Image (tube, rainbow, N blue to C red; front, side, top):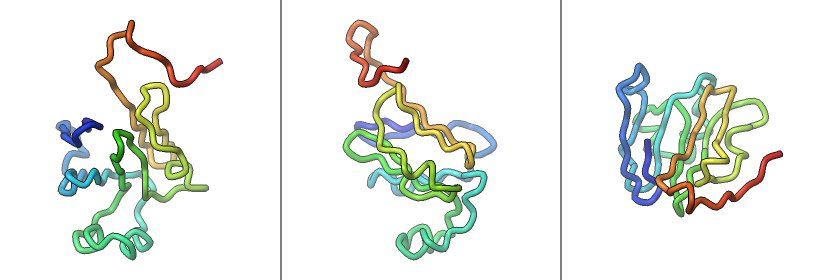
Length: 119
């Protein structure tokens, strides 16, 4: 779980715990495992930290209190093409990599103004 305001994070004790890299959290960069993101050549060309540490997975960016996927591999780049979100109504869904990024808020329901309407 990542706080979108200050990049503080909590890594849950799951089987993937050791595959999550939070070293660059102050920059808003997090690396998480992905089911089909395994070829990292493109990322390694632009990200020396990932290359030097042999990171394998999806690169997530928290910026301007929004979260986005900035590197992954999937057919048609479905994860990476989704726009940054800070809304509980707009999760980032990356089915090929079996990744869903949900946004949670502590706003009271009477203060909540939806930014999207689904029909």
